[in-house]
Image 1 (cartoon, rainbow, N blue to C red):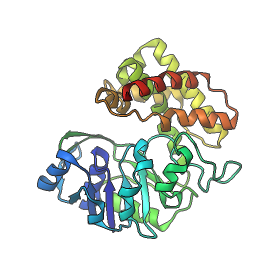
Image 2: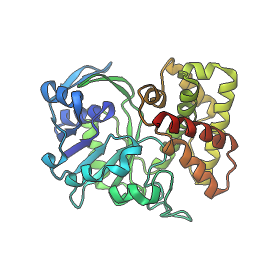
Image 3: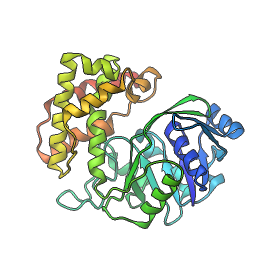
Image 4: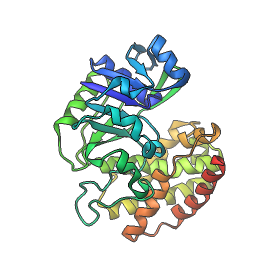
Amino acid sequence: MKVAVLGAGAIGAYVGAALHRAGADVHLIARGPHLAAMRQYGVRVLSPRGDFTAHAHATDDPAEVGPVDYVFLGLKANSYAACGPLIEPLLHERTAVVAAQNGIPWWYFHRHGGPYDGHRVESVDPDGAVSAALAPERALGCVVYAATELEAPGVVRHLEGTRFSIGEPDRSMSKRCLRFSEAMQTGGLKCPVEPYLRNDIWLKLLGNISFNPISALARATMRQMCLHGGTRRVIEIMMRETLDVAEALGCEVGVSIERRLAGAEKVGDHRTSTLQDLERGKPLELDVLLAAVVELAGITGVEVPTLRTVHAISDLLALRSAA
């Protein structure tokens, strides 16, 4: 099985190292000091489950890799529209794209069925730019429950979780899903194939849609947000509104808001990825987390006043931080 990891950052390099350990032909695509370190020393994974090093091929040139069976997409979702020239050399007619993104994916309504089948979510796929670069037919959904960070160039610190749930947009148990799942599990990761992956998308989103923008606005950690009474109430309301939208689209999260908050509080003084991006001067990945749900609320007729308010303020923050 030949796999390219496009955007081999903390999550991408971790997955690539696991697949390499499973015997897959893995190619890590990255740049800068991180690429140089992976070329010289391999990917060094530091994990409570045991440290290991994977000496997979690493490059900054996808043309050097050529067509693969799977592209694991480790890029931020706001980079998808521009990734066409990078991904094109990696594709043959059956290449699957495993998109490990947070929030609402560009393929969400592809083979969805029902009244919204084929609907394009403008906030995540503006003018169809993402679909033009990443054909929805190639997409395998992926919801990441693992936490990793780059401790140094070429060094991935695995913090917790090994689950990468995957699924087909049409809910089928396809051979390409099963094959990828088997390779991930052989490499030591959990990779269940979920026919109703959209439920997982909303479960993950329940936390991201609330904690991520609020953390950036307040410069606060998970524990600080949970312990502040007023902020905790705002987060509860945002979660309730998000569940209303999910239910209007036929999805069931299956976890109570209180349980979700309790889990977040246990994480402690963790800074969300959005807060980390803000601190590092990187673009804020809020369209797929917040703008998309506000858009979906509009088409389903669900009232989400708190989500709209937080979206307006955090969108201004994103614009100012990018200036």
